Amino acid sequence: MSWQKSIEELRRRERLAEKMGGEEPVSRQRGRGKLTVRERVAFLADPGSFHEIGKIAGKATYTVDDELESFSPSTSVTGRATLNGKPTVILADDFTVRGGASDAAIWQKMVMMIKMAAEYRMPLVQMIDGTGGGGSIKSLEKDPRTYIPETPGWNEITHGLTQVPFVSLALGPCAGMGAGRVAASHFSVMVKELSQVFVAGPPVAIALGENVTKEELGGWKIQGQNGTVDNVVDSEADAFETARRFLSYLPASVHELPEREPPRDKPDRREESLLSIVPTDGKTPYKPRKIVEATVDTGSFFE
Image (tube, rainbow, N blue to C red; front, side):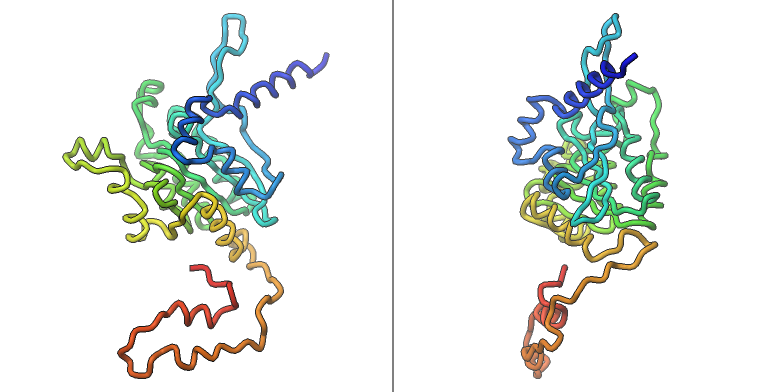
């Protein structure tokens, strides 16, 4: 007996998973100026470091002869990688499959990654693009009940937040559970004109008599100023770099101390501007950021 046939079938399903939601949804994703989920993982992680977990998890249909007829992968790509050489757990939504919604799909992948991050004491980076669950008509058709207010994964999220750094990158419309995941993190980022964060989208607001666009309801100008997210950046590439830099200041978990690095600033550096940067009259305005940048190591300030 040989496992060759089973291995070939596994590889076939892996290739199907790599197609994500199919040509048309992938084309629409790129048409919106967004990267696909697998492109995002490739840009975020150190080259060649990503080890995917649960790749062939999804929904399949079979013929009467038990042959695979069709396959739709789960709405997330998950696994382990290194960022700047440090082990990290990655949880990335795939908007091309059911708009990234995890209900009526495989929400257990999300919970597994959150539990893995806490257990293995590794930071978690979430790339959120979609609703991420929270109850839908589709899930009610599948199972005539709702899991609200239980919300699968909530206990794991609250426990994980006490153990390891959680970073959330909002890379598209984040509604419902997706918005909750953005907020339930130690550091969150939005991309200008690309991402929005709201409890429910414009159709719900319109039904309540409020005619608003996605940007007016939860765009970066709103959520970046009211403190829902920590930082706002210009592009997805900037979001990835910001996540990597944020994590570079932290230990992998509460069980470790931050890594010590050799100093890169001159120990005898003097900033003469500090003698005059604050006006003596007590009335003239000044820029406090210049004080911070002159006080800390050159180029090290991360706001």
